[in-house]
Image 1: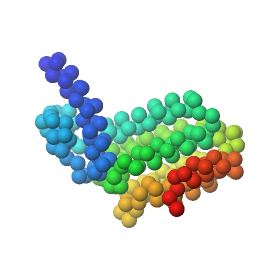
Image 2: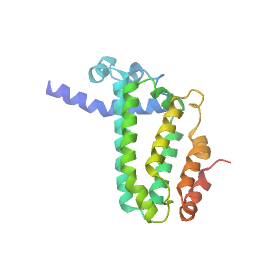
Image 3: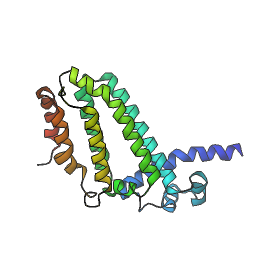
Image 4: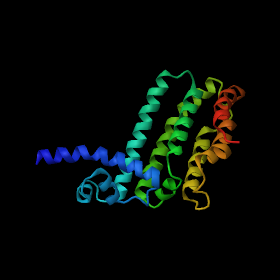
Length: 208
């Protein structure tokens, strides 16, 4: 029995990795438990013994992805020179992830309320953790001192929710978001010193 349990435990990270790959390539809705099991050459019953439904798999996918990004940024922050390095790395990661993510991935999230709630929790945690980041940016002269950054982050979170749930907007690509939304907001909080570094990055990634 112990051997069987150990075997199933080794399957879990494989299932999550494959599910994340398929969710991002095809959107969440179109991926089935059977599809994941066939790709991994395991029985669908085995997957159901570990995860009762697709939403449970999705929740763990989001948890693993969130933890992976958090660890990466914590390590990156230890060796960076200033807050603009951190901001640019966040944008780079978003671009890299979105380039490999189907536009329907975020639209489909709205159909899974538990996963959506957990994502909202992650965003709330990010808001709380961002206060020190913005204070540092002001001290270093990269961010404007007259911005209420708590309000700024609340607006950002609200806009992300609209983008995920508005049917008219859910086919917008990340490149379009970068061109017309993200870079506009980021530039709006930067001083001239911050703009110099941010614009150097954006010049290489903005599609005109």
